Amino acid sequence: MDLPIQNDRVVTLAFTLRDDDGALLETSESEDGVPFAYLHGHENLVPGLEAALAGRRAGDSFQVVVEPADGYGEASPDAVVELPRAMFEDDIAPGDELSFETEDGEEVPIWVIHLDDAHVRVDLDHPFAGLRLHYDVQVLAVRDAAELELEQGYPAD
Image (cartoon, rainbow, N blue to C red; front, side, top):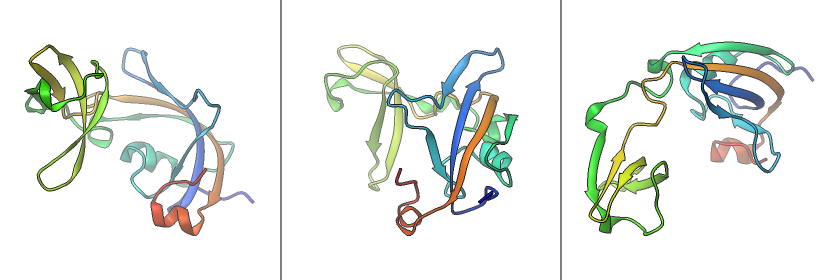
């Protein structure tokens, strides 16, 4: 069955992501050999890439440039904050992605950019915020999502 990519379909991709200078930022190759899959229409990808995938089919290959507004947003200088070292586990390092719970109980991702004995400097922006994203994409498979996948918002595979 040759299904087009649309909402509520599981899509399996191979991709590379580079910045304006051609530096590799990310790839779909995983250490365990499991291909990258996502549930289309459930905010599992940056909006610009998801929009570029809509209507494509298994076997399609393409390149797309996603501007910051349709990617991880613009970088904000106010997003870098220093917090007391005591708030964190001992085994953190620069580059680590952590989850921080707000007073409202919302989980917010943060990225460690520097630490010393007294403080940890974190960035609330994604590391790719402010970057133009250059994707090279191959669509490997498209299938209808199972009921459980629709309920949880991501593929079961």
